[in-house]
Length: 141
Image (cartoon, rainbow, N blue to C red; front, side):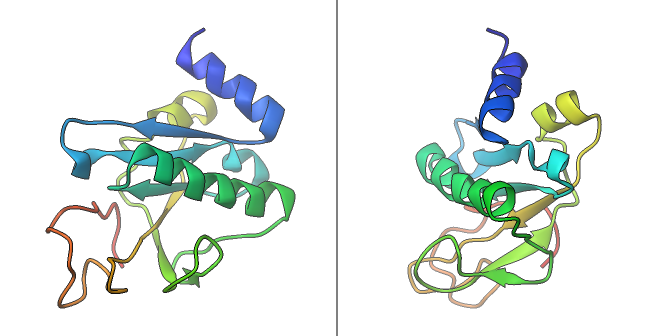
């Protein structure tokens, strides 16, 4: 089955799908939702995570948006995805990697949920424990 047709089938069945984009450089990996656009909500992206982790987080996002009517908004934080520090939500400026959303909906509006390091620090904070670039930011915080 064509990958886009496969995503459409998942969207028809569940209300959304998650697409993982792998790369030899783990920092270039990302996972994103496809289908939230149909609910008047931006698609959601997470970068720099193993595909299984990104997929799991974004399925929670899909449940919140599609099943519970929840919303994520740029400039806010969320504690709904995991125990631990709040995760900021930022507007995505560079949507070029979200090719499936473009193919299905013809346009892309997206948010990125930013995860913290093991010490609860964010990529832009002093003392961030992960290597620079380990979590690509697709917008401004």
